[in-house]
Image (cartoon, rainbow, N blue to C red; front, top):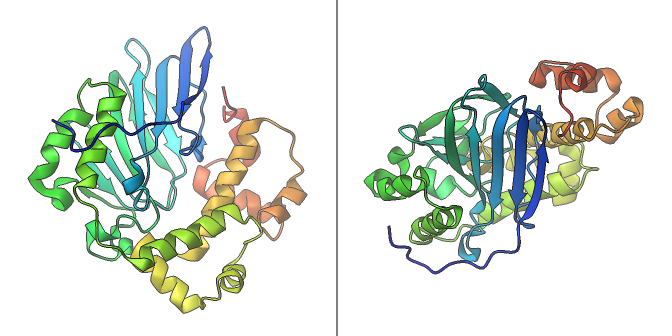
Length: 297
């Protein structure tokens, strides 16, 4: 597949790798793409695992957050269950014979890995997939559909590159070329949806929908409509999810935590509410999670 655009100059990748007697985990990411959040149980008992995050071409930054590539080699090892707490973003995931578009998943996501393979994903900005879906984002909540249902047979050539053994740069070039040829018409509501979600992420004192209304000067009903149409989940869900991501990061750090203060910081009424919320999504209490291997390698 001949790229339609030239190579995008990338900032040097930041790498974090850890070898143990039994396993190797490597994470590499552009400074802009940043490190992954919401990943549970990073500890890999055996085999090799690599997670790469790359920024898209600047022309696509309005719609696409980043590309990601996960590869693993577990030959001769037991299968490994990867667990994540999903973000309020649509994903397009390319895998041999199983390429899908995924809406926002509201529960914990689990994926069993075995043998040797890789997956190439495209994480869209909140609201960024709406022009391709041509339906309310909420219509695909907790659902996946075949990628060809959205992009037709034209996606076959891109899929062939992304599921092949091509180099990482070639995959990124192919994805850039495909989506640069399909840039949607401008939509101010996409920009608005993205700005609101970013505020929730960055302004950690936004703990309730009332806080969000105060910051944005947008009424609750209007916010609900924007999120239903462009994001796919409610504003309350996004606030709760980002605070849960923060809790997972704190737990993964292995640092001592002051639970009552942390509960208030993250917008919970008290420590019990924090624990119950975490357990309802993760399946363990925070202390149980730490014991079963939630710490970083």
